[in-house]
Image (cartoon, rainbow, N blue to C red; front, side):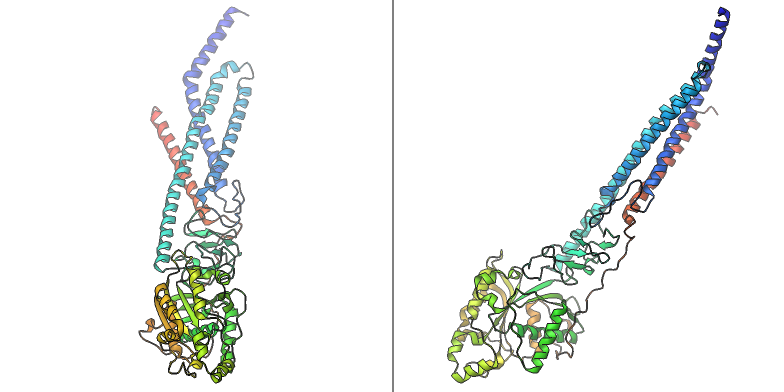
Length: 572
């Protein structure tokens, strides 16, 4: 080849390189850098919208249906969304950039013209590679954005959880809310019941402010459930977490008051319980309150007992099985509210230490109702004449268990408690006084009067003094079938901590109501609201939209910053 021609070609190539690197390379590199960066940003925003915008469980970042309730969005799903976007965008941007570089290399450097197109190729490839730096900065900034959203959201969530938990604790402490199980072979104290979703029936064991949400938990079916009693949790169906038995409505909002009826066989416990419910029902009606049974079977048994009284018959003997508490929900005007657990076991459960030990509800009681059958007192039985004994045997069954022995077994069991079995209130009820006053030893004892001195005279002096040591307050009461209902209502209200007459400012009449109480609910059920089982919870949607909003702001700020930087560098 002619040396002159070679020198000419070299000169042309050097001139092309000089022109390319001096004028073409800077402009093309900057343009490529902006276009490649904008393309990477666009890809990221596109996949972010595809991931965060859907409201269904399916999608690029699917939300797994929980076993019971969804966890808070910021405790897991937010980072799964971030990882889904990152693991999708980064490989796609890398593959696209690599493919573009390969195409440019084959096109611009694939022939003799490559010697002259080298500045163009280098500007394009360098711009594409250099775009990785602002793209990485953007991804890092987005990760910081995710962390910021998560940190702020979790701080608000934690503050709400602590405040709501404290409010509920103060509420339950101020109202002295006690929750216990009324079911046989359980009788456990309950910290937090299980709550059933009113839509699908799923049991929620930890329906409280926590990982599932502060104000609401979202069930697997999409229903939104309240997390505290002040927010309405008492309106859900509740179950014992130990045995699974159904608990009364309004449990957690109203104090449960366990009231064991203590007495030997045939002492008259069931009769007095029926008389007490009848009197309390009359009192609540008189002061415009409400009383209802929790269980329909108890309402039916009570109605049957009233019919038996009207016919002048005797109530059937209580069965030998451990008792389900007769649950009575009482609400009087003002703040007088109680769920009464009236435990009326067969008297045989008090005739031995092992039998008494099975009555685990004694572990929670602050009050006792001690039923004394006067005809079970040894000294009184010895004082009856043959004619009186025959009359008593025909009129009513008598217990063979000495009441002093019965009470001693119960007190021995109570002493195993941390408080040594201390009781706030003990009511001692002397039953069958309508028969007792027809005997010589009981003549002059008025129903409704205080029989303490009389019990002392007939051999229960030691028992009376023991009760004075065990209980802060002891009240004695003489009861018969003809006892004034108002007096019975006063006693039952006192022993259960329910001020039956206080709401009316006096002692209202308590005529027997014509109809027995039923099982009408005393609270409105929780309404089913939610987004349905196929959509993510509202909290998830809000969290995703917050990230999308932050991403939009970050994108606009990036574009504006790039435009300002470019404007400052341009010569005009």
